[in-house]
Amino acid sequence: MIKISPSILSADFSNLGHDVERVEKGGAEYLHIDVMDGVFVPNISLGASVQKSIRKQSNMVFDTHLMIINPIRYIDDFAKAGSDIITIHLESCDNVEETLDKIHSLGIKAGLSIKPKTPIEAIKPYIGKFDMLLIMSVEPGFGGQSFIPESLDKIKEARTLLGDLDIEVDGGINADNINTIVKAGANILVAGSAVFGNDNLTEAIATLRKNGEK
Ligand code: DX5
Ligand code: ZN
Image (cartoon, rainbow, N blue to C red; front, side, top):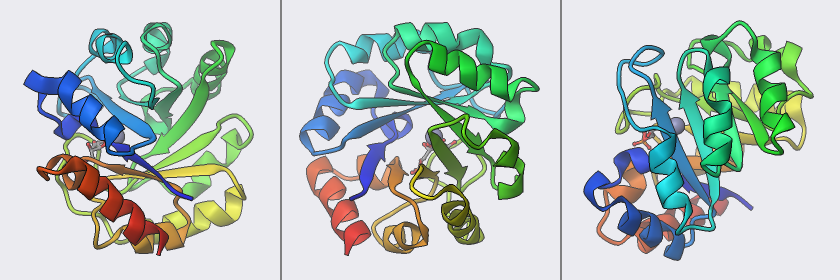
């Protein structure tokens, strides 16, 4: 069974509450919330206050992806704003273990993410300290990019290394490539443009799931 995590980066921000409701009704289990600081990545997106306001109307698993420098500064804020999982980047700080521990101390699942050029090898010191690995399959910063094919080998390598642990993949996933990505070992699939780029979000989510599980 796979989980689909629509990325709100591709939603209509002037109608965010409505879009969140549409993906929840459409059958998505997770909601992927991309937080960008304009330093770790070139783009700025949204902060904890936006997440807090959508938390009130949704029961989805809030899957917060922090693309920010020194994320330990904001763990409390996102915990209060209702994250169920907080993912930090291995490349974003020197105190990765302390940051993962901090997330756990607040009763929240901790995710560890790596950018396309970071090898799987780099996560080895932290195995046992995180609940989900997030493999970026595009350079973080923007929605709508193409899936980097070399990511497939990283997903396979991670699956062999991590056993049953959750492996999320983020970037460039669509109805045509999702099956290969699931076969490689991913079980949580982020999709921004492949969901919100359609008028019928329920149909888009169902197609991703069907193609992913076939
Ligand atoms: C990129 C973000 C992704 C992005 C995915 O930095 O982390 O979550 O929104 O968008 P698509 O699915 O359009 O590549
Ligand atoms: Zn993301």
